[in-house]
Structures are given as C-alpha cells and as structure tokens.
Image 1 (tube, rainbow, N blue to C red):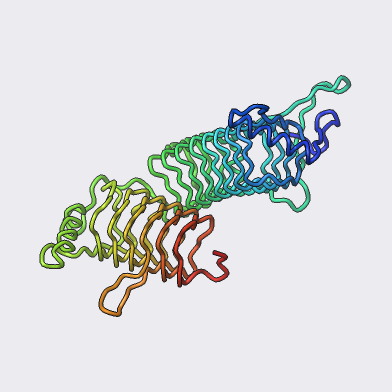
Image 2: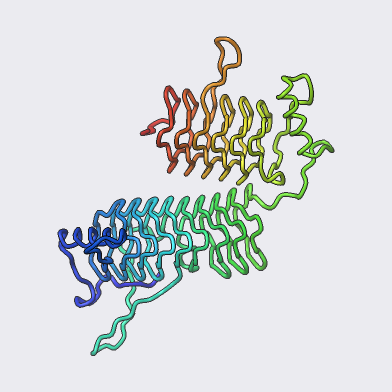
Length: 412
C-alpha cells in the first residue's frame, strides 16, 4: 500500500507540542458543535506516532499524510476524516468509527481494526508525491519495519459500501467482517482470511480466492462469475436457500403453525416440532412467534428478524444465528450450545433460568457459543452458562450476569 516514506523531507513532516495538539482537538470539538472559536483540525503531515487519542472525536479532520504509527485510536470517531497516505502501522483502531473516511494509500500494516466501522470508506491504492527542485517529483512509500505484521486485523469490521483496493483485501484478516455489497471485482484474495465474513451481494467477478479461508462465509447473492476458489476452504459456506422448505413433505410454515397451536393449547392440539438442521431463511422473519420448546438443533436462521420471539426451553444447539435480531426475545432455558451468534442483537433479551416445576429450573446454556460482536446490552442473563463461549467485542453494558458461569479468564 504505497503512501508516505519512513524518511520524508523535513519540510513535509511537522511536529506539534502536546499542548498545541490538545488545543487543536478542543477547537475541533467546538467546530463540530458549531460553537464560537471552533476550527477544523488540520493535522496533515503531523508526527503523531504513538499518540493517545482514544475515544477522541476527529470527524472531518484533515490528517493527510499524518504519522500515526502505534497511535491509540480505539473508539475514536474519524467519520469523513481525510487520512489519505497516513501512516497507521500498528495503530489501535478497535471499534473506531471510520465511515466515509478517505483512507486511500494509507499504510495499515499491523493496524488493529477489529470491530471498526469502515462503511463507505475509500481504501483504494493511492500515492503521495512531493516536489523537490533538485529531484523533481518524488513518490514516498512506507518501508516494512522488522517484526511488524504485514497485514491489518479487520476482524468483525463493518465494510459495507467501502471501496477496497486489492492490496488491502489481500493483506487483511477479514474474519467475521461485514462486506455486504462490497466490490472486489478482480481482487487478488488468494490466501486471504475471510472466515465468517458476510459477502452478501458482493461483487467477486474474476476475483482470485484460491487458497482463501472462507469457513462459514456468506455468499448469498454474490457475483461469483469468473471467480477462482481453487484450494479455498469453503466448509459450511452459506449460499441462498431454496424458495420453499419442506420437512417430510410438509411445508415448514405449516409445521411452525402446528407447533404454535401445540404451545397455545398446552399440548392438546397441534404437534411439537422436531426439525433438525432446517433452513428457516425462506420465512424471512419469526418476529413475536410463540415457539417455546422448539427442537431445531443445527437450524439456519442467519440474519432473520426474531424480535420478541418466545423460545423458552428451545433446543438450538449448533444453530447459525449470526446477525439475527433477538431484541427482547424470551430465551429462558434455551439450549444454544455451540451456536453461532456473531453480531446478533440480544439487547433486552431474557436469558435467565426457566422454571419447569416447583423447585426445578432449566438454565440457558450458551457453552461454546460464538458471540463475537454480539449486543447483549440490558439483557437478563442470570445463571446463564457461558463456559468456553467467545465474547470478543460483545457489548455487555447493563447485562445482568449474576451467578453466570463465564469463560475462564473473562474480565466482565
């Protein structure tokens, strides 16, 4: 990724004292709020290596060619900022907001963009050239430093609508990344790490994905014409479902209607559904449905709307619930052992114990479940089992985990 050199001309890079930087950031804050004495921050070609700007709002700031190697920018707001040709090697950009940011030509080797919002940003190749009377125009490039990673970590990053250069895509760990609708036409993605990535409606025309890791990747509606997958790991790749799902010659929607009747009549009418490994996606949504006790291990519910659904005591072990809307759902006593819940919205959900008889309760079991980037804000999860669960980047603000069995070493 061409950009600035490690040894630019003295006239190009400038320094700011900590006091001057603080003043620039404060003036920028006033600028964003429309207050008097507000000034848009111009930090172009400033040496900001290893600076601490965690959580700072630099939306719309000019950071063209800035040195930000090793900078602490976690949760920083850089929406619509200009970072053309910036040096972001080894920078901590976890959960940073970089939507509509100009990152053309930026050096991101070793940068941690896990959980960052890069939607609609421009990550194409770019160069910076300066004029020297003796040498004429000179193009600068970052030189690899000993021991640094040669790729960016973009696990769980949101890249919807982003313009990606083939260089970035090839040199990034895009595990669990949201690449919905992204154009990667002709990109060289050979040996790329894209496990769990959502490539729904992505343009992969003539892309080279040979040797790429694509376990559980989503390729629904993607343009794969001319794409090469030789030697790629396509285990459990999710493609478009059929328009209708039948189980033992019965339409899936009728089976669920019979199950709801069984629940409403307390077993007098209808029939309890036992449907393993069924793809529910053709139903689009199960919002507010009464599906208590549903037995559907291995079910595919990817991206569906299940807001307010009642699934008390249901068995959804090993199910694919990535990106599912489960806001306010009743999941007391649910079995979600080994389930995939990355990016799922469980805010306000009930995950506590379910009383099944006087003095007897059934606990919700999410042991070994993958909850990377899931939202459990305000959820009730008393006594929930989360043994060996993956809670990386999960939002747990206000989540009641009283007496929960948490993963070993979990910091809360």
